Amino acid sequence: MHDDFSRTPVASDHLRPWWYLLIIEMGVMISIPTFVLGGQLGLGMSFSDLIPATFCGALILGVLGACTAHLGAVTRCSTALISRLTFGARGSAAIALLLALGITGWWGVQVEMFADAVVQLARNGFSLSLPRELVILAGGMAMITTAALGIRAIGRLSYLAVPLLLCGLAYAFVPLITPGKLMSLWQFKPSPSEALSFGASAATVAGGFIVGASLNPDYARFARTNKHAIAYALTDYAFAYPLLLLVAAVIAVNFHSADIMIHLVPAGLTWLIFVMMMFATWAANDCNLYSSSLSLAAVFPKWKRAHLAILAGIFGISLAELHVAGHMVSFLTLLGIVIAPISGIFVINNLGRKHAVTEEELASIPDWHSPTLIAWSGGVLLGFLATPKEALGLGLLKLTTIPTIDAILGAATIMLVLKLVRSKRQCKSAAKVEPAVSV
Image (cartoon, rainbow, N blue to C red; front, side):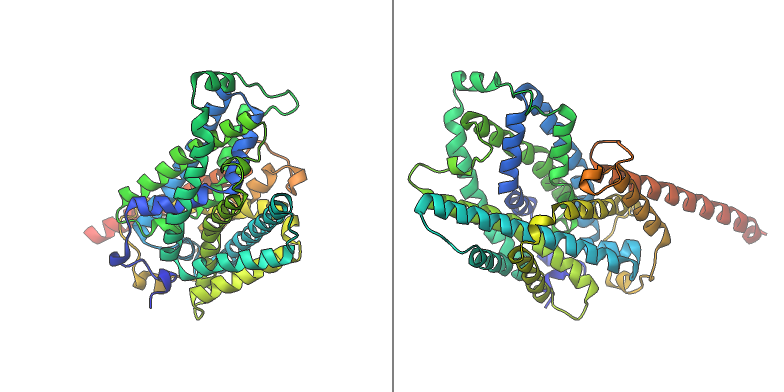
């Protein structure tokens, strides 16, 4: 039993086409946070500014997503296994635990958000009073099932969720495609108190899924070819994601509300909103728990990945039940700064790799890789320096305005310098040895 290849490279007979992986990632993208983000952007900018800002932020995600997808397709390994290769057997253990903690915490936050939305919908739409704790438990346990079953179950769930959610968006958006309506929407101007700057909007778009793009190898490892991996990553991040945000923005401006979920179904079908909310949260959140279980599998080799997914899900449900998840947003933001630099180190450290990782290579990994750990520490420090004080950072620097991108670029730059220094030393050593060999 391969346990979804949590500890070994993916076998060639389990590879998938690019569109299969795209549907899974679309299930992550078409979610309540994306709808809310698109609505907030739409109400905060004119469309003449919003369109270029959205695609600018998405381009940043597309470049990072393509790089990490390429790495996953080449190595055939999960993010946790690539971390093991990069940081060493022991060096990667702490990083894997941080990955699992951060992703599971965000999973718990989304379960709590889902439960609060369901309780409010039941109260307003059906005059029912549902116990919040029971909704958290039921919703969380449902989401655990497919994450525990693995990539095949997540794919099947996305087959159901993506078409349904796209139909909902089309229902609200298509009636707005008339010359008069589009012209009035195009002329929309936000109030000065709610207006967003171009840079802040682009940063928000990029920051919304940058940690997810960093974890791309968890899915790209199943791509049939490197081209398939890059195709699905670019299509998802640089094309589908900004279009979803713009559609949500148009709907939000039309209804003067960032809460667009209630407008995705005909009047009188309130129950369908619940179904769409469940799918929107389930499909997106499953990938979080799945990635968390892969990280835990690298730390606890004797446990099955499916069992680790269940345990992580129970922990996430506990956070939501104890209302801890609602206070974890700043903490999770900081964890994003810890997680994001890993992708920059992955990409630089594996430049030139053209073959999949072998099980023999995994078995012969040293305990520590000092250069990569130094680069990671430097990237994390830069991220903290660039994070505002209100978000628990130090607020001493302001570079790209996106602390996670600052952390990625910082870690990648340090890794590149260390790699060049090591390469020069190897060349000098070879030059010293060569004359002795020729004599």
